[in-house]
Image (cartoon, rainbow over all chains, first blue to last red; front, side, top):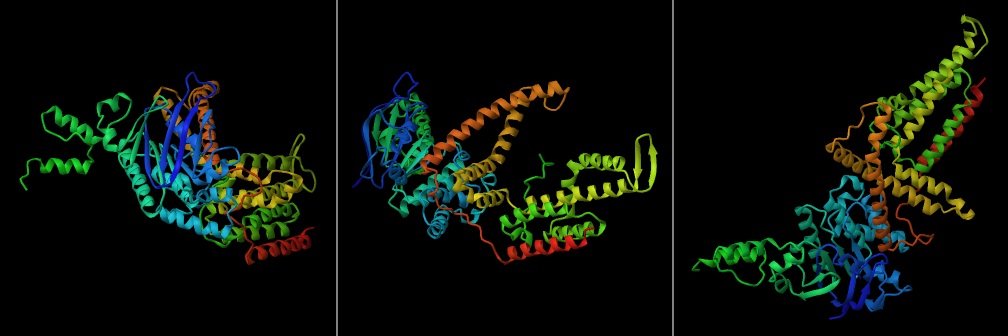
Length: 278
Length: 264
């Protein structure tokens, strides 16, 4: 598998901070992989994302994105390969209407208008927002605005999409909507997803989970492996997914439950077969 | 905020709505300028008839235009009263010391009133039938020649577009902050002027801080999406003149000729 992102011994220190924000981070994300980065507030998750597309420059270490080493003369090429969906749906909506916003990134790259029209239409179709093309942002829900933000990135045809807490300001329905959309986009294309999140249910959809704590990689593994830590995750400032909480509560009442992580359906399946003789 | 009719676009599909915003902008300015050519009742009647025809063509109820006049009514009446009392000439109908109502005064007052109303009607027609964004596009397009003089027209247009885009966002934010402050016991809109001004402070400061947060987030997002400024950007939104725009331009020429013939 080709490597989408390679980070090698990256260190980052905000000029006015007491402690370094990122300490000796090394990680590799493969093409087509979905990696979730979890960690408490201030653990350096968002800073890491900004280091990947050159919004911040590392103090030391290298970042290689799609074969390009991040440097001053490659930063615009790298930004073309990496799309970021930010946390606040309103504050990243540049265009006056949905279609204008999707076109913004294309305008920046000087894409000719006839091609732009096609790409905007296709991107809106991909995120299911075609009928909203002429709407103004004030008349959209948070989830719809994030879908538009994703469309803006899809239109640029990037290799990598970073969700920087993109679902944290949405209601549960909005979150599920965005996660489902990302899954659909991944099924259609060979998109690499890096999702930075507090939401364990979102992290559970990933191929691999990386746990950041105080700027260091604390653990890395499959969702099953990471969530098996249960109570320790809570100590690191994370919310544990509902099935895990239920499992802990069942175990406390003397019900035998498996030690590995289960999805909500997995747990339901386990529970209903517990006393079944079928 | 509901009283603020300026920039309140009413979606529609009339002939006026479909005109190119550049045509509408230029024609409105031109129309306002030629209103000053009218100087007798025939020419005012012509302008009144043409204005009414334009309003009718927009298929917007007359009430919306009258509402545009309302905030200006005191200014209009003040000017009209001044005209009536201080214009001398013709038969005098009433006088008290240095105040006098003369025929010229009454006629001038009526003309000034007409002029005000027509100007407000036409500018209201422009803002009701044109999206603020289209107006921004029109301004950008019309000012484009200034790029030769190194005026950053494209950047200014983007600034204008973003400002328009964030008006509703900041209004929402204002409502939220007002409610939050009310919950903490701030009393908006009561007490004397000084107390009212003081009540606005806890509203303005959070709003100011919010604007900076939004600006920073937006700048980051624009950066991440490859915004580098400059003239190498392509445009998604383009303006095109159609036959109706040519027709509107010709109508202005004919109108000017008619006015020149009719005026005293």
